[in-house]
Amino acid sequence: MSQITIRVELPAHLRRLACVGHEVNLEIDGEATQRSMLDALEARYPMLRGTIRDQITQQRRPFLRFFACEEDLSHEPPDAPLPHAVASGREPLIILGAIAGG
Amino acid sequence: MSKIRVLVGTHKGAFILTSDGKRKNWKVSGPHFAGWEVYHLKGSPVNPDRLYASQTSSWFGQVIQRSDDGRVTWEPVDNKFAYDGVPGTHQWYDGTPHPWEFKRVWHLEPSLTDPETVYAGAEDAALFRSTDGGKSWEELSGLRGHGSGPRWQPGAGGMCLHTVILDPSDPQRIFIAISAAGAFRTDDAGKTWRPINQGLHSQYIPDPTAEVGHCVHHIAMHPSRPGVLFMQKHWDVMRSDDAGDSWNEVSGNLPTDFGFAIDVHAHEPETIYVVPIKSDSEHYPIDGKLRVYRSRAGGNEWEPLTKGLPQQDCYVNVLRDAMSVDSLDSCGVYFGTTGGQVYISADAGDSWAPIVRDLPAVLSVEVQTMS
Image (tube, rainbow over all chains, first blue to last red; front, side):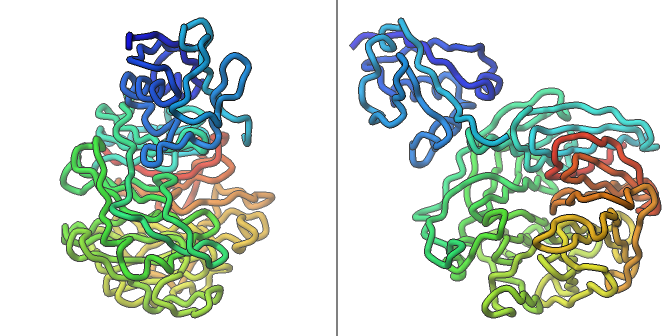
């Protein structure tokens, strides 16, 4: 399968940790899924390992959510295909921190 | 001319306070890692510009940062803290078994001899070690594997390993403390551990003199006398003269012996400091008066130190890792509060002044004395 480019928006704290802007472009080999997106993100920005999904369990951190195309994708299986609009680069996948606490 | 660097971890970032040896005028750098909880920062004793910081967040988990230039630049290093083998369970608050889950690093203790080696005390309680400057971590699992592990239980702040003390006279010996399991010691560099809680009496647990289950808040040691330990327990200030094999209460005339912080004067091993806190349900000083208590007799006889500290309407707390000393000729004593003040006494506690007043809640204070 060919390489595709997807767009990912990171929350502010992770942008600062990775020293990147509002949005990053990621090259993905094969199908665009949450897992392949996170694999590509962590490979390119190793300092983000463990900040979005637990390094041991690979579970999404409970206070983070995945949104795209006005849909909450947080509870989709990690290997489910991302929406076509994300896989085609037309829409970003948004990683969002829950608004909780101070 | 000497230089002092105070490393302050807060609820919303790290701050670094620097001064010359006069300790009058201070520069404030920060916030570093703005918006994150920084539980602890500490420098290597053999390379003071090698700093380690524990940056953590309920949202984003754990990050370990390292600086090689004394805080100008930072580099995230490895943050994978994997328990060795099948983690098993400890007791939950209600007494039921609960799986061990890594949450954060409370304390970083750099080696006394090698800047690449650093220990990390974690919640849920475990001790990790890196020998490559934080690029990888391994658990010293003999501690958690001690047979009492399934009986350990979290304190109100979580089941945290918050104190790590390296014995300068014996590289094989390490002391650690866990809330609320108690104190432990290894004499073989971390392979095997044993509880050192004999003499502790904790009214709030089913067996008040149990081998484990004590809520030890902090332990301090003077490097010239590594066999003498001072402990602030949940309630009670304790002393051991045999490297923790037995403990005696030295609360003496303290107005309350609840508290978190305890430390030892840099040049007088019998001079110790605590900050009495009213109770476990009221985490602030008695009568709104912030008072450090000093004993010059290694405990039992205590004097309040009040000059320069607020003596009315003060309801802050001083947390377990938020007190430290410098090693200048006139020993400097420092502590931070949950109200965001960092105080210094440049005369061993006789008088105090704030370095800063309005930081986020202070979690930890460490001091580096550099020539």
